[in-house]
Amino acid sequence: MLEFAILGLLQESPMHGYELRKELTAKLGAIRAAISYGSLYPTLRRLQAAGWITEAAETPATAEEVPALTSRRGRVVYKITAEGKERFAQLIAQAGPETYDDTGFGVHFAFFARTDQATRLRILEGRRRKIEERREGLRDVLGRAAERLDAYTLELQRHGLDACEREVRWLEELIANERSGRAPTVPNIGTAGGRREDNSPPPPGETRNERP
Amino acid sequence: MLEFAILGLLQESPMHGYELRKELTAKLGAIRAAISYGSLYPTLRRLQAAGWITEAAETPATAEEVPALTSRRGRVVYKITAEGKERFAQLIAQAGPETYDDTGFGVHFAFFARTDQATRLRILEGRRRKIEERREGLRDVLGRAAERLDAYTLELQRHGLDACEREVRWLEELIANERSGRAPTVPNIGTAGGRREDNSPPPPGETRNERP
DNA sequence: CGTGCGATGTATCGGTCCGATACATCGCGG
DNA sequence: CCGCGATGTATCGGACCGATACATCGCACG
Image (tube, rainbow over all chains, first blue to last red; front, side, top):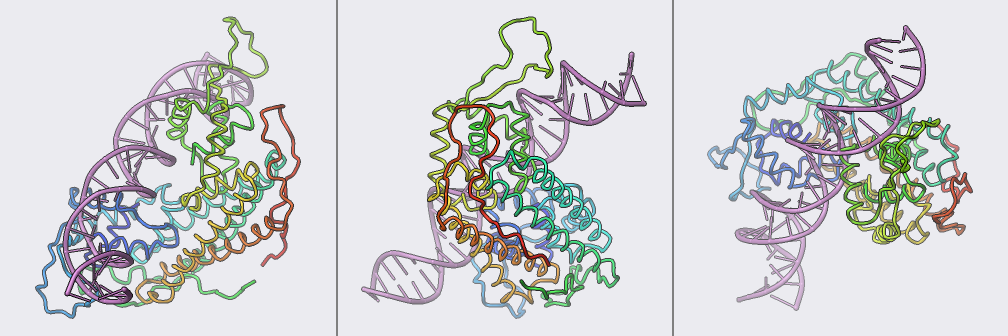
């Protein structure tokens, strides 16, 4: 999972560890607290050993407009390689069962802008199936085994069931939106050109209306 | 976390590994998929080594055993010890920051029937604080860094923010309910007596009305 | 003027937990 | 009678976390 996220992020621009963690936290804030350095640095070394990323010593060579936000020091900047991009594409294409658990799905979803529409659809449907199964399990427990459990445990199940139903509805919306055609597939996947701002892929869920 | 859950479950009745896993899955189904044996068995051995649980061999001494209704074969039944109960109480009393993350909170909540009211309140408020922080983080990202992120990532954040707001409301309800007085604290904590059916502790959240 | 503190930055270690795998028994239906 | 799904115990490698250590920088406060 971390491997996937790192490869995905480094395609946007080269980064050093600290920066990577911050971006990761911002991008995945909805599903994970914060990536631990105890995972990050070993993973970076693993990716480097596999040839998917390289160290790029920070050099001020070009006279580009460089945002002054970051000061340059003895930092280790990582950069994705061609093999790394292949690896990332391969990880997207696989999309096995582990892609549908909470974390796996969240990470994949976060990189949907770099995922082709067919795969997006497949992942969304796989996730929906998985959540539906969890939902059925909870309904079973609440129905059949209710008297064996105390009130707090039952309340926990109800809350979980609620969340499942809500997520299924959310996924249905996304799937419908995905099927309905317009799919830019990939706004920017090339190596070329530095910063790009935004060219808004398809607005996934537009309906932001009902509020209790 | 597993340690806590096992000690909690074994206070209801002795169990063997397989059974333990099933009960665990039923009780924690709302927050975790299923406990892996790769965690369960090593943890059982660790708890045994610490003296918090003991093996209670199920098979009687006689070599020839006529198979009864249920098949009993070389199953290893575990039973909690007095030290184990102390350990469980101690784990409840500690309730550190790790108690407020998703899994930690869920597991603690599942054993609220064995937790005193003051601690329940403390845990609920700690969890609320944590979720509120996550919520603020998501609002920040959606506000300040929105144009740096693609539409899918933003949708993920929105969904996460929604879940946060919902959980805070749920917690508020539970906290209000908890404060409002009636708290049986512990319905059954004793070692004695076999199966008990139910004597319904306080209904934590009663309001089950609004449906969009 | 200095001093300490929070942000930036890299790194390791022990421990928890998961996923895959292996193996053995039992009851039941085809 | 044979396979297959449920029951049951167990191990191994790997992913990830939390605590910890250490070093530099800018700046706010005394």
